[in-house]
Length: 192
Image (cartoon, rainbow, N blue to C red; front, side, top):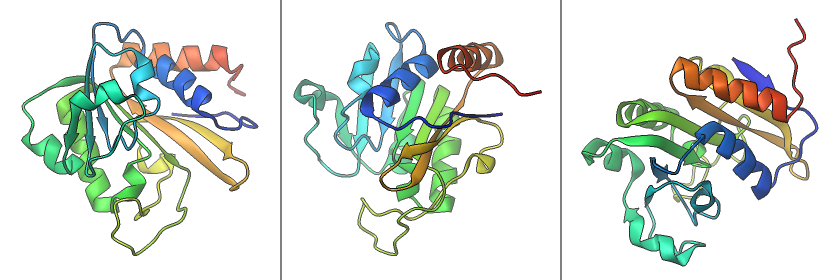
Protein backbone atom coordinates (compact mmCIF):
# COMPACT_ATOMS: atom_id res chain seq x y z
CA UNK A 1 0.00 0.00 0.00
CA UNK A 2 1.15 3.52 -0.75
CA UNK A 3 -0.06 6.83 0.64
CA UNK A 4 1.11 9.93 -1.23
CA UNK A 5 1.16 13.24 0.64
CA UNK A 6 1.41 15.95 -2.01
CA UNK A 7 2.68 19.47 -1.38
CA UNK A 8 4.32 18.82 2.00
CA UNK A 9 7.87 20.09 2.33
CA UNK A 10 10.21 18.18 4.57
CA UNK A 11 11.66 19.19 7.91
CA UNK A 12 12.96 17.54 11.04
CA UNK A 13 9.64 18.28 12.72
CA UNK A 14 7.72 16.52 9.95
CA UNK A 15 10.06 13.51 10.16
CA UNK A 16 9.52 13.28 13.94
CA UNK A 17 5.75 13.70 13.56
CA UNK A 18 5.42 10.88 11.02
CA UNK A 19 7.86 8.66 12.92
CA UNK A 20 5.88 9.14 16.15
CA UNK A 21 2.77 7.91 14.35
CA UNK A 22 4.61 4.91 12.89
CA UNK A 23 6.39 4.04 16.15
CA UNK A 24 3.34 4.43 18.39
CA UNK A 25 3.76 4.12 22.16
CA UNK A 26 7.52 3.80 22.64
CA UNK A 27 7.79 4.32 26.42
CA UNK A 28 8.37 0.62 27.13
CA UNK A 29 9.98 -0.33 23.82
CA UNK A 30 13.44 -0.90 22.40
CA UNK A 31 14.84 0.60 19.21
CA UNK A 32 17.90 0.22 17.03
CA UNK A 33 18.81 3.20 14.84
CA UNK A 34 20.85 1.76 11.98
CA UNK A 35 23.18 4.19 10.22
CA UNK A 36 22.29 6.76 12.85
CA UNK A 37 24.75 9.41 11.59
CA UNK A 38 24.33 12.21 14.19
CA UNK A 39 20.98 10.86 15.47
CA UNK A 40 19.37 14.31 15.49
CA UNK A 41 15.78 13.11 15.88
CA UNK A 42 15.55 9.47 17.00
CA UNK A 43 16.19 10.40 20.67
CA UNK A 44 12.99 12.50 20.46
CA UNK A 45 10.90 9.39 19.78
CA UNK A 46 10.96 8.37 23.46
CA UNK A 47 12.18 4.78 23.28
CA UNK A 48 13.07 3.32 26.66
CA UNK A 49 15.96 1.26 25.26
CA UNK A 50 18.09 2.66 22.45
CA UNK A 51 20.97 1.38 20.34
CA UNK A 52 22.62 3.54 17.70
CA UNK A 53 24.77 1.92 15.02
CA UNK A 54 27.03 3.69 12.55
CA UNK A 55 30.09 2.61 10.61
CA UNK A 56 31.82 5.83 11.68
CA UNK A 57 32.46 6.99 15.24
CA UNK A 58 30.42 10.16 15.03
CA UNK A 59 29.51 12.75 17.64
CA UNK A 60 25.77 12.52 18.26
CA UNK A 61 23.60 15.64 18.36
CA UNK A 62 22.36 14.52 21.78
CA UNK A 63 25.72 13.89 23.47
CA UNK A 64 24.21 11.87 26.34
CA UNK A 65 23.04 9.25 23.79
CA UNK A 66 26.62 8.43 22.75
CA UNK A 67 26.85 5.75 25.46
CA UNK A 68 24.51 3.62 23.32
CA UNK A 69 26.49 4.05 20.08
CA UNK A 70 27.99 0.94 18.49
CA UNK A 71 30.55 1.55 15.75
CA UNK A 72 29.91 -1.16 13.19
CA UNK A 73 28.78 -1.88 9.68
CA UNK A 74 25.00 -2.21 10.04
CA UNK A 75 24.68 -5.52 8.20
CA UNK A 76 27.52 -7.03 10.22
CA UNK A 77 25.90 -5.71 13.41
CA UNK A 78 22.52 -7.27 12.55
CA UNK A 79 24.21 -10.58 11.73
CA UNK A 80 26.16 -10.71 14.97
CA UNK A 81 23.80 -9.28 17.59
CA UNK A 82 21.70 -11.53 19.78
CA UNK A 83 19.32 -8.64 20.56
CA UNK A 84 15.76 -8.41 19.33
CA UNK A 85 14.22 -4.92 19.07
CA UNK A 86 10.66 -3.67 19.06
CA UNK A 87 11.59 -1.26 16.24
CA UNK A 88 14.46 -1.15 13.74
CA UNK A 89 14.96 2.21 12.00
CA UNK A 90 17.14 2.87 8.96
CA UNK A 91 16.66 6.55 8.20
CA UNK A 92 18.75 7.97 5.36
CA UNK A 93 20.75 4.76 5.23
CA UNK A 94 19.57 2.27 2.61
CA UNK A 95 20.64 4.56 -0.26
CA UNK A 96 24.22 4.33 1.08
CA UNK A 97 24.22 0.57 0.47
CA UNK A 98 24.24 -1.36 -2.79
CA UNK A 99 20.86 -2.83 -3.79
CA UNK A 100 21.99 -6.30 -2.71
CA UNK A 101 23.34 -5.09 0.64
CA UNK A 102 20.17 -3.01 1.18
CA UNK A 103 17.97 -6.06 0.61
CA UNK A 104 20.14 -8.07 2.99
CA UNK A 105 19.79 -5.34 5.63
CA UNK A 106 15.98 -5.33 5.24
CA UNK A 107 15.84 -9.12 5.68
CA UNK A 108 17.98 -8.90 8.81
CA UNK A 109 15.86 -6.02 10.16
CA UNK A 110 12.79 -8.23 9.75
CA UNK A 111 14.56 -11.03 11.59
CA UNK A 112 15.71 -8.79 14.45
CA UNK A 113 12.61 -6.63 15.11
CA UNK A 114 8.81 -6.50 15.27
CA UNK A 115 8.62 -3.29 13.23
CA UNK A 116 10.94 -2.12 10.47
CA UNK A 117 11.07 1.47 9.21
CA UNK A 118 13.13 3.04 6.48
CA UNK A 119 13.28 6.62 5.23
CA UNK A 120 15.10 7.40 2.00
CA UNK A 121 15.13 9.77 -0.99
CA UNK A 122 12.56 8.90 -3.65
CA UNK A 123 14.40 7.24 -6.54
CA UNK A 124 18.00 7.35 -7.69
CA UNK A 125 19.45 10.58 -6.37
CA UNK A 126 23.13 11.53 -6.28
CA UNK A 127 24.28 7.98 -7.07
CA UNK A 128 28.07 7.74 -6.94
CA UNK A 129 30.74 5.15 -7.57
CA UNK A 130 32.65 6.56 -4.59
CA UNK A 131 32.92 4.03 -1.76
CA UNK A 132 32.89 6.67 1.00
CA UNK A 133 30.25 5.77 3.67
CA UNK A 134 28.33 9.00 2.94
CA UNK A 135 28.00 8.29 -0.83
CA UNK A 136 24.71 7.11 -2.33
CA UNK A 137 25.15 3.71 -3.97
CA UNK A 138 21.52 2.93 -4.80
CA UNK A 139 18.12 4.50 -5.32
CA UNK A 140 14.85 3.17 -3.94
CA UNK A 141 11.16 3.52 -4.77
CA UNK A 142 8.17 2.14 -2.83
CA UNK A 143 7.44 -0.50 -5.48
CA UNK A 144 10.73 -2.17 -4.52
CA UNK A 145 9.24 -2.89 -1.07
CA UNK A 146 5.95 -4.66 -1.89
CA UNK A 147 5.39 -6.02 1.64
CA UNK A 148 5.81 -2.57 3.20
CA UNK A 149 3.40 0.35 3.53
CA UNK A 150 4.94 3.49 2.02
CA UNK A 151 4.26 7.12 2.82
CA UNK A 152 5.50 9.13 -0.15
CA UNK A 153 6.32 12.83 0.11
CA UNK A 154 7.12 13.85 -3.49
CA UNK A 155 7.92 17.43 -2.42
CA UNK A 156 10.04 16.61 0.66
CA UNK A 157 13.18 18.39 -0.65
CA UNK A 158 11.73 21.24 -2.76
CA UNK A 159 15.03 23.05 -3.35
CA UNK A 160 16.61 19.82 -4.60
CA UNK A 161 13.42 18.79 -6.47
CA UNK A 162 13.55 15.33 -4.95
CA UNK A 163 11.01 13.54 -2.84
CA UNK A 164 11.44 11.06 -0.02
CA UNK A 165 9.44 8.25 1.48
CA UNK A 166 8.94 6.27 4.64
CA UNK A 167 8.28 2.54 4.37
CA UNK A 168 7.33 0.36 7.28
CA UNK A 169 6.47 -3.24 7.96
CA UNK A 170 4.72 -4.61 11.06
CA UNK A 171 1.75 -6.70 12.17
CA UNK A 172 -1.67 -6.24 10.57
CA UNK A 173 -3.43 -4.53 13.48
CA UNK A 174 -0.52 -2.14 14.03
CA UNK A 175 -0.32 -1.49 10.29
CA UNK A 176 -4.00 -0.49 10.21
CA UNK A 177 -3.56 1.85 13.20
CA UNK A 178 -0.67 3.65 11.48
CA UNK A 179 -2.45 3.94 8.13
CA UNK A 180 -5.57 5.38 9.80
CA UNK A 181 -3.58 7.89 11.88
CA UNK A 182 -1.63 9.08 8.83
CA UNK A 183 -4.83 9.48 6.81
CA UNK A 184 -6.54 11.44 9.60
CA UNK A 185 -3.52 13.62 10.46
CA UNK A 186 -2.74 14.55 6.86
CA UNK A 187 -6.34 14.59 5.55
CA UNK A 188 -5.64 11.88 3.00
CA UNK A 189 -8.70 10.11 1.67
CA UNK A 190 -8.87 7.23 -0.76
CA UNK A 191 -10.18 8.38 -4.10
CA UNK A 192 -12.01 5.07 -4.76
